[in-house]
Image 1 (cartoon, rainbow, N blue to C red):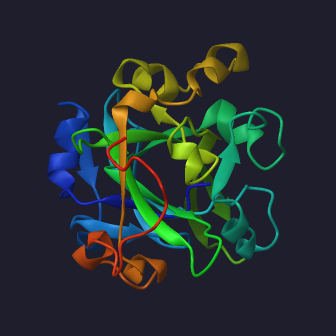
Image 2 (tube, rainbow, N blue to C red; image 1 turned 30 degrees about the vertical axis):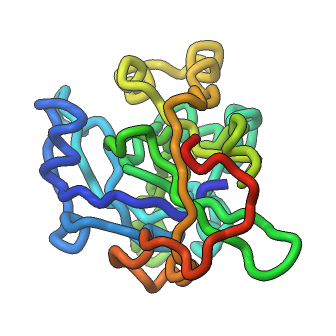
Length: 240
């Protein structure tokens, strides 16, 4: 599962990380660093521009709302799509074929259950802290009253060791060399797309425990990344 993530760079820096053809079309509130992006909130996603060959950073709401949904609250449950079933699940299969996106991040959170006490949050990132792209799906929903919601979900896969000691799932992180294929709307064949959705090499991942301040989705500030209030007793190699 991936229900919270970070993007602590400003919008222009994020755009530069994905290439010179990326335009920023974000409201001011999404141009600042984000420390705790949660379901139901708007976030920046990268998708093909509609009018030309470029790409654009655009706002969408976290939680996919299929075009056929009757209740907009359905999006609250569809934050993740499993790589193993994304091509055939009714909620995701159309977006998988026709409207894929990239979800920029520089980290995500997972919570580990403990034998006693509350779950311990961890911040997971690509080694070195660089911006990366999670595989995403995008949908546009139109209500009977004429309202429009642009939404997205994140695709997940099995987490490799040692990250699996925290949580068995993680977002699919797409390497730069496959971004073009993933965003190409002319590619619809699952035989081409599904092999891209593989676990990220564990040697490129690092993680550390953070403060339970992040537990509240209303908290979106650097304290989310602060060290935990007490050292967790987890028996993990936190360098890995």
